[in-house]
Amino acid sequence: DAKTTQPNSMESNEEEPVHLPCNHSTISGTDYIHWYRQLPSQGPEYVIHGLTSNVNNRMASLAIAEDRKSSTLILHRATLRDAAVYYCILRAVRGTSYGKLTFGQGTILTVHP
Amino acid sequence: ETGVTQSPTHLIKTRGQQVTLRCSSQSGHNTVSWYQQALGQGPQFIFQYYREEENGRGNFPPRFSGLQFPNYSSELNVNALELDDSALYLCASSLGRGRSGTDTQYFGPGTRLTVL
Image (cartoon, rainbow over all chains, first blue to last red; front, side, top):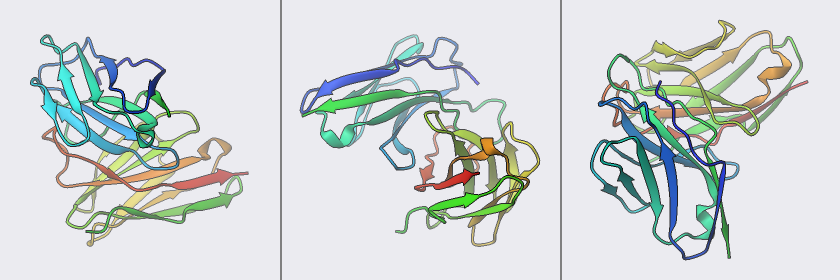
């Protein structure tokens, strides 16, 4: 599986935007970029995914670099409920027959009131 | 729509014992995946079941086994428990076996297993 690199931790203030970076320099052309987050004492939760174009949904936006070697998850207005571990995951399509998620260490996001 | 549920919530076992963890998938989902999450680490993929058959496995020994039933619920069995098996065990359900790269996995809250 292609590897992702994320900062160990980031901090933000409530109601400010948060940009969570992810590097994936070995990404292949068919790998999808997925983001999940894990709130304290809960299972991971899907946030967003994309392939080449930037994506928006009700939770967040995903900005993908033109060369696809990096991406940024954007929380437009952080709330205290957004405090979680955020995982950037590459989903391989070619050469796989099943859909496992390969989690790294993730980024611990702390939101200050 | 009912989400993914897991039972029990917590479990304490001793080394050498066997344990069975249970998962009910989200309504309409035919695929279940199991993950092990050690304290402070990201979840690690154990295996995946699609329509009652194992169709993918991570780097876990054979003493980790599973089942998926016709209603798509699932069990994870671990034999000969070791201290390092202490972890949060997560179940995730999805629709389709995951070949598209776009499917979303929905996780349960997990079962916390402690091996003494």
